[in-house]
Amino acid sequence: MGSRSVLQVFHNYQKARTTFTQTIAELALKPANIESLYEANVLELLKPLINDVCPSIRQCAAVALGRLVENHPEAAATTLNSNLLPTLLSELDSPNKYMKKSVLYVIRSVCKNDAASADALVQAGGLTSLIYAMGDFEPMVKESALCAVGYIAKHNKELAQTVIDAGAIPSIVLCLQEPEVNMKQVAASVLADISKHSMQLAQHVADCGAIPHLAKAISNPDAKLKRVVFNTLSNIAKHSLEMAETVVECNTFPNTLVHLAHSDSKVRKAAATLIRDVVKHSLSMSQMVVNLGGIGAILECLTSDSCTNEEKVPCFVALGYMAGQNDQIGLSVINCKGVDMMAEALYSEDEVLVSVAVWALGQTGKHSPEHAKALAAREIFPKLMEIYTDPRTSLDLQEKTKNALKQVLQKCMVVSALDPLIQDAPPSMLRYVLGQYTRILPHDPKARRMFVTSGALKKLQEIEAEPGSALTEYISLINACFPDEIVRYYSPGYSDQLLDMVEQYAPEAMSTILREARMMTSEMQTDTGYVLDETTSSASQDIANAMAV
Image (cartoon, rainbow, N blue to C red; front, side, top):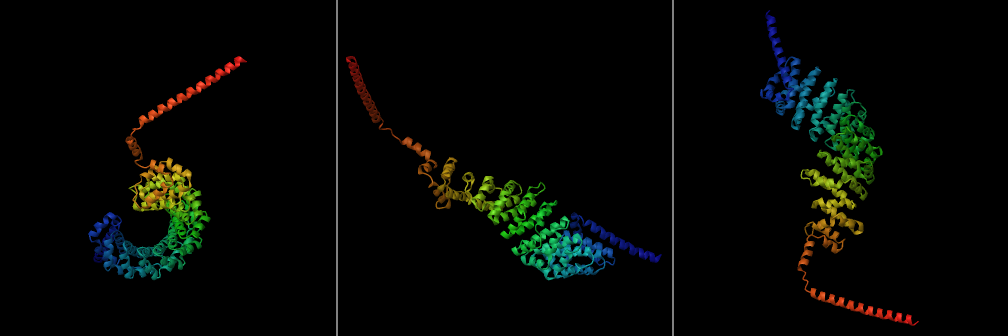
């Protein structure tokens, strides 16, 4: 009975520790409890339990610590400043896979908070332990180690370079080839976090042979894996033409275009993002996508009922890059009704979507009068001017709208599209409108007539421009295209001048005019009588001669 009583004490103690760690872990699941737990000094209570003799208690304590650290930055700093980190890293040599996973969860949570925490972990030798754990036999351990490495690399270029210098890329590429889909997802995500920072880092990922395996993973039926792979390829291709060519050479097209019709919206968005990051570099890349039917595929995605604004943004940017590279591609976008889709997006409440649509319209219409005429035919100029002058428009959107209008107006030769802008355009945009008139009016009589009848000439005379400015010069050049009488007639105050002339006019010679009028009347009557007398005499002589006969 004595030994049983002693063992019962230990049993109760172990049970109490287990209950405590499990309860803390459950409480830490709710973010609302984190602050209360931290203020209750729970970290100090968990520290000895991390070194507990019972493996299950150590594991529960690690899980509870990970959840606290993940949601509380100060808890992460406390963990780094204490002696817990060496103890946690030593547990990665444990044969217990669940313990390894729990420890890696703590490390991942520490790295997730900020770059300083991730750097402190690296300095403590945590990165070396993570790379070692990536070679573990258990997939769950590999996956957890990959996640932690990804959180280190995503913060900044320096930490990503540290991951490369530690030799982690080959191990990540090997994980990408594992049969487990979750493993592939995490490995591709880590490569994306490394590649996004600079061309040198992306080049190192490419040199390690990751791109062919990423391209192969596109054919995997898992939607999340497709999305992550497209994002990774985008992060590689976006840096330079050489990187984009490397991605294309691995047979990523036309498979990427096919995925614009995928049932998952995030996959469609990721595919559109990759197309955007490929075509932006050169005409050859744009022409390749166009030859594969890229314009039609993008427009089909845009016209889909399930297409969201998040998908439309990279689609419009891709169209803008392609249309801006070449006038023929621009015409192809116009002929495929791409401008109609962009014009429709101008009425969206999503400012990001409106911004990219404005930019794409500028890229499409900047090439020639034919391109600008296509935009004018869809009455896009008044809407762009409305966006530009709206006080609620952000500075970024206002700048993009100004650039788009400037690019297209400098090519527009359609007078009917320019006339309304004289009424609404602010001085900063009016100079471009009038500049086009100086090119059109000197050579087109019909355009001059329309300029007068539409009221544009009258509005022109009402513009108050600073002397010596470009606006004043344009006004003078346009006025020179018309007779001075017409210009004066439509000038402000001309009607008042006419009324003043009426008031100042003095009819002092009126009596002379009347006298001269009477004299003229008298002379006319005298002349009429003389004619009648001659006529009468002649008639009488004719009668007498007739009777004599």
